[in-house]
Amino acid sequence: MQTLTPSFSTALHFIGGQLHDSPTRFDVIDPATGLAFQTAPDATQAQLNQAVVAAKQALPAWRDLGYEKRGEQLRAFASRLREQAPTLATLLTQEQGKPIARAREEFERSAMLVDGITRLAIDSELLREDARGRATLHHRPLGVVGAITPWNTPIVLAVSKIVQALYTGNTLVLKPSPYAPLATLNLGVLAKDLFPPGVLNIIAGGTDLGSWLTRHPDIAKISFTGSVRTGKAVMVACADTLKRFTLELGGNDAAIVLDDVDVEKIAPQIFWAAFGNSGQVCMAIKRLYVQRKAYEPLVAALARIASQVQVGPGADASSELGPLQNRAQFEYVRGILDDTRRSGARLFEGGQRLPDSGYFIAPAIVADALEGMRVVDEEAFGPVLPMLAFDDVSDAVRRANDTTFGLGSSVWSSDLDRAEEIANQLSAGTTWINSHMGVEPGVPFGGIKQSGMGVEYAVQGLKGYMEPHVIKTPAHDLQASH
Ligand code: NAD
Image (cartoon, rainbow, N blue to C red; front, side, top):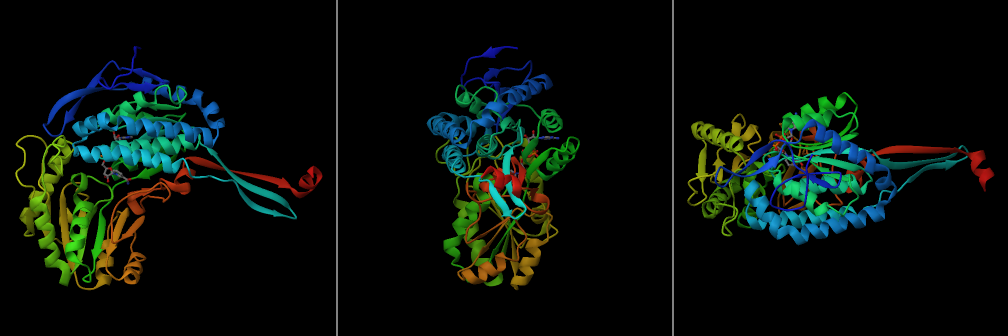
C-alpha cells in the first residue's frame, strides 16, 4: 500500500499516523452545482483491519498518559483547527453546501468543544467507607472506539467524538459520511505528528465500511450520529459482540409559543433555529405550535423573513442559506413540499431568486399545518417549517409529545415560571426556554425515545466512553496497612 505526504489537495485515509490511498476512489459532489469536484478513497476491509490494529497497538501508552497530557495534545489539535479553519472551511462549504461564514464557525465551535471537554474531570468516587471496609468507583477507557458521522455538521461531530474518545484514554477509528468526507479526512493531516501513531485513525467509505466497523470484534464501542433507521441497524450489529454504543439520532423538535411573546423579537430567533444550515440540523425546530392570538402575526413575521433571505452557493459571501447537501435529500424535501401543496395548507416560499443548478430549495413556511401531513409527522431535514395553531397549552403539550422522536423542544413565553412548568411536561432530551438549539461541553446532550440512546458531552457523556470499575477492600486489610 502506498504512503503519501500530507496535503490538503488529495483526500487520503489517516491510518497508524500515515496517509494512505485506496485502490478505488468515489466522487464527492458539490451540492451548489450537482457536479463531482473531488474524489475520496474508499477503504477496503483490510484497511479497516489495519486501522484497528494500529489503534490497539497505540492504546496502552495513550491510556497510561493521563488526562492532563492527553488534554494538552488535544488542545494543540484545537489550535491547529483554528489555524487551518480558513482553508478547510472552503472545502467544507464546497462539499457540504453551507455558507462560508457558517463553515468557519463550525471549526471555531469544534475547537471550543475541545477546550471545554478537556477541562472536565472524571474523578474516582468513594462509595462507602465503614466497618466492612472501603468501596471505590473508578472509570477506565473502553479500548478502541469506532465513530460514525453524518453529512450535516461533519466537523463538529467528528471533533466531538475525537475529543471525547481520546481524552478518556481510548483510541479511535472514525468514519465520516461518504457525502461529505473531505474536510474530515483532512483532520488526519492536522493530527499527523501530533498524536502518537494509531491513536486517531480516519477512514472513508459508505454503508459497507460502516457495517464492518460496527461488527469488528476488536472495537469496544460505537459512537454513532445519523438517522434513526441506520441507528437501529447499528444497534443490531453491536449486539453480536455486546459492543457499547451511543446513538445520536434524528429529531422532530416541537417549539411551543405562548401568546404573551413579543412576536417581532422572537421571529428571527425562531427562523434561524428552524432554517439554519437549510434545516439540516438534528435539533432544529421542525414543528412550530403557536397559541391562537400570536399565530397570524408570527406567520406574517416568519414569511417576511423567509422572503428576504438570500439563498445561494455557500462560497458566495452574500448567501445566508446554501443548497441541500445531496440529491436524495433534495428530492425527499421536494416530495414533502409537493404533498404539502396538495394538502390545502398555506405555503409561503421565500428565498429571493434561486440559482438554476444545484440542490437549492427556497425556505418555506407552512401555515395551517396539521398532524397527519408528512411535513408535520416526518423529519423533513430541510428548509420547511410547519406551523400549527393551538388554544389550550395542555393540547399543545400533548401534540408536541405525540411522536416517536424525543431529541429537543422549546417553550417561548415572557412568563418564565409558566414556561418552566410547560418545559417539565415535554418529552425530550433537552428543552430550551426562549431559545432552541446548541450544545456546550459541560452539558449533556442526547435523545430519548427513538432519537437515541446515551448522551454526549459533559461528564455523563465522557463516562459513555468508559467502563465502571469498582474496587473493594476489607476493613481489616485497611487497618493493617495503617
Ligand atoms: P445516515 O444514518 O444515513 O448516515 C450516517 C452515517 O452512517 C454515515 O456515515 C453512513 O455512511 C453510515 N452508515 C450507513 N449505513 C450504515 C450501516 N448499516 N452501518 C453503519 N454505518 C452506516 O444519516 P445522514 O443522512 O448522514 O444524517 C442525517 C440524520 O442524522 C438526520 O436524521 C439527523 O437528525 C441525524 N443527526 C443527529 C444528530 C444528533 O446529535 N442527534 C446530529 C446530526 C444529525
